[in-house]
Length: 115
Figure 1: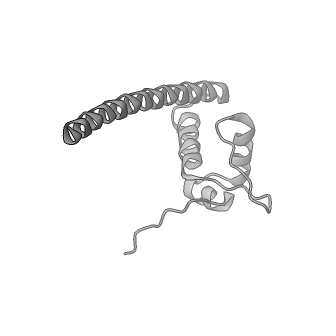
Figure 2: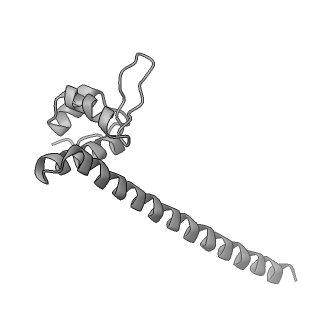
């Protein structure tokens, strides 16, 4: 059996099949959730990425399984995204600190070699 190949971009029809949601539902959610804004290609067709599909599945879970209202799901999704942004910023700060430390160590090693 061949493993599924992940694509960079998916059409609204493909996303509809993957998520088991009608295209009109996906289009409606785009108007209700600011986090869901798939870009359009030159032909004007929506091009969904993997992160868009993950957001759609999260919205679907909140609305259909956890019985959130649209406003409740929107609020919950905003909190989750803000939290992940903070985590990403913390990781970036830690990476910068680590790079700075490595740079100092390498300079020390170069000084030892050159002297």
